[in-house]
Image (cartoon, rainbow, N blue to C red; front, top):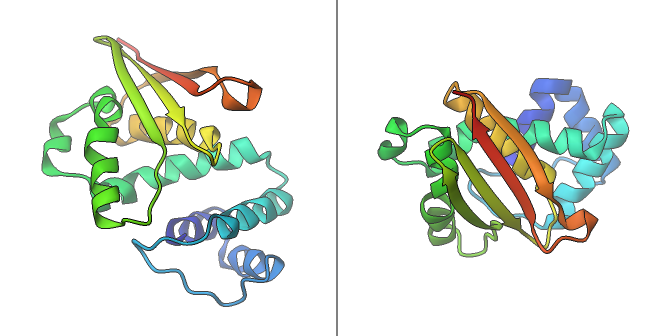
Length: 175
C-alpha cells in the first residue's frame, strides 16, 4: 500500500492521493512498509484511481507494476541478483523473492508463479492468483526489463479473464 501511495503521488500528485482516500472512505489511514493490508482496500483505491484518471484498470495496474520493481528488489532482493539479467530474475522470482516474502510476512499471499526458461532469450511465466491481477504481473515484467536496462518483448498468451486456468506471459529478450 505504501508503494501504491507513492505511485499515485508521483504520477498524479499528493492531492490525488488524498482524494482517493476520501473517495474510498479510508480517511487519513497511514500505511506502513512491509505490512499486509486487506485486499478490499487496494481494490477500492484502484477502482477510485481508474475513475479519477480515466485510465483503464489494466493500464493503471501495468504502470503500477512497473513502478513496484525498484522498491521490491530493494526490500526482497539479494546481492546475487545484481549480476543477473532480466530473464534470470523472472525465471527465479518464485524461488528467491516470493520465498523471502512468505518467510518475512506469513500473512502475505503473493501469486504462484511457474517459470520456464524456453530458450536462452525467452522465459514463460504461468501466473495464478485468486486476485486476477495479471495486468499488474505484465507491468512487473516490463519493470524488470527497465531495471536491468534491457529490451523485452512481453505478451500474454492466455489469460484467466478469458477463461484460461492461468495467465501465460512470455518475455523474450531482443538480441
